[in-house]
Amino acid sequence: QFKNNPRQGTKANVPALNNKAQRSMATHYENSFGVKAAKLWNLLPREINTITTLGPLKSLLAKFLKEFPDTPPTQGYTATNNNSLLEWNLQKDLSGVIGGRT
Image (tube, rainbow, N blue to C red; front, side, top):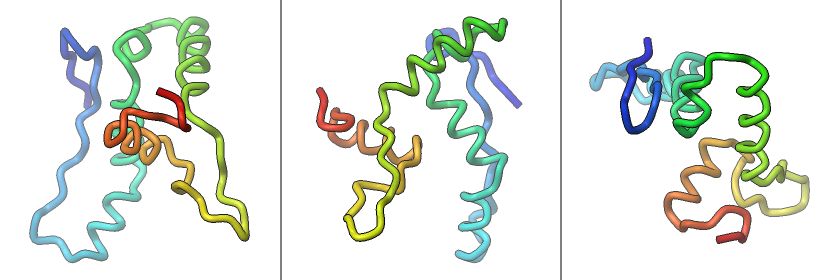
C-alpha cells in the first residue's frame, strides 16, 4: 500500500511486525521483500517517487543512485558497511556525509 504525502511524495507503508515476535522472526521480517522494498522506495526523493512515466523515472533514478558509492565488501579489507542503500542512507543521516563527500 502507498500513501501520498504532499511534502514527501508517494510513500510505501512498511508492514507492521508483532511486538511480541521472537528475535529470529524479527530478522526474517527485516529481510523480507515487502519490508526491504518499502524501505528502499521510501528512500527516493519526491522528484522521483511521483513520476508516472518510465523514461524520466529511469533517468532520475540513475542520477539518484550515483550519489551512493558502490563499494562492495572485498575479502581482506574492512568494509564501511555491506554496500546496501539502506545502510548508506543511515550513514548519511548520522554523519551528513556520503562516501567522504559533504
